[in-house]
Length: 403
Image 1 (cartoon, rainbow, N blue to C red):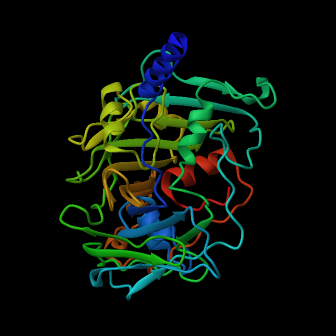
Image 2: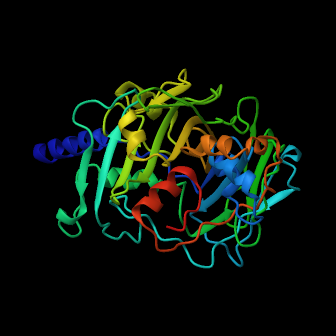
Image 3: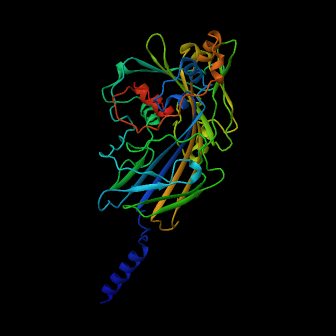
């Protein structure tokens, strides 16, 4: 009897020591990604109307195309719609896009990203890749890092390559769920008006999700444009890159992609080491950490010198840039939410090196005064075969490359 009492007491102790169960996960999660694009990407990402030559040259130099705004909406719910799925994002009047945006369920669920971070249709590249890094008139010792794809074991990635590919394909919220809807989509891919604003009340309602409601206020609208430009060349050949500081940016990162006459792929980043920062949405806390490691430039920075060795290797490379933005998080109950909503912000810019000089020599300075091309609808991303360089460029800039 005594042994039974001891055993019972021990069981009670064990039961008492067991961790209490936390609240169940939310029924629905909503992601709202907000992008500002200036320079080349602002005029070319939408497709559609063909800009004239002067406008193309201005956009390539980063001086044309104006500033474009895009939003990406994804609703994922654990509840499957009882009949035909239906959901809408009811928007504030200031956005100038009517009453709501339809969140359409794709006919085919999108494939989940690969665990190794590589593109779904990854193919072994050929040739070599030369990787440079750092802002300054000259590169530091030990550059470039050379990756010879011919010497790689099939299916194996050299150090750093997986992270680099992942930088080009960052997941923007959920890909699919029992109940899932997104915008833009095949039914509605309207362009966001240049003067549209996100400020005001937002409500998401559908037949497979609890109703979601939140408001965006001051400091939670589209970020400002970076207006990245090539601001001159030093006697050494190094190029000075300058941009307009954005008040609510948490940090900046730049990268250049191109190829030399030998066919080698060339990559450069503004990081202090060979580890390239992800050129996509990052949480403010992560950006702060990366500033500490030197992978991201502080928000007080407004210029970076492209080293002479890199400028000489790729005179017409594509330079891309991101200004990381804030985040806003909402839920119906902080302790046991039925739904959560996350709003993420970024501002991006891109330019093609050497275009500004070509404009001047060709007498095309008037392009700056020309109106930007007609704003085109946001296009849903479609899968297609592509190269690693194409993946990296499109992932960093949002510009469809077709590569």
